[in-house]
Amino acid sequence: MDNNKSICHKNNNNKIILKSFLPLFRFAQTKRYLSVKIKKLFSLTDSLGLVTTSEEIFYRVPKGQLKIRFAHPGKDIGELISISVQSSIDHDSKALGKFLHFFEARISTLKEAGQFRHTLGLCLEELAIIRKKRKTFILGSVNFHLDIVDGLGTFLDIEIHPQEKNDKIDENKLFCKAQELLKQLNISTNSLLFYSSYLELFLRGEEKREESDESAFSDESVAP
Image (tube, rainbow, N blue to C red; front, side):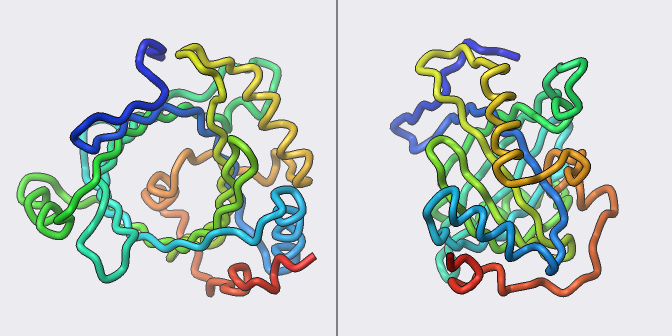
């Protein structure tokens, strides 16, 4: 992986180059213990969580992922995001390693996102549309995303960003952090999914024909 690029850079064109380590732990929740996990997140982060909704249009591209994200209902504002998905971390004797992935995302703000989508659609095929409702809990450099994804189900997506001030990322340190978080949330590796993104999950035909449990987004669901 190229470690010569800056971890985060913003230029005058409002273009953000973000490089981060994102081990994703996704597991389908059942109503039986979903509330227990929510309370653990509340206790761990001391936060009620921030709720957002988004619609992401993915395009068929030869490498990585390209999508437009709409996250401002009623406004023609969006983001153009390209994602380079790296291979999983090589930890020969550690089963958790195959669930950890490097991502490099480049994000640009779109002021006329609807028109841009139309223009992009003239030359690129729309591959999938992913709609989700997300509740984010933050603990330092870690973002816990509780997601309800249309047609797929309910998941927990844990996102860890590197804290190094230089371009060198300590994989072992982040791996240990991932292990620590799973232990704190009482999540076993058997509960994890191999997929690195919701797009991959969707394309593999892993749709869940179940009714979304909106109670996960109520304040009462995280009350101590």
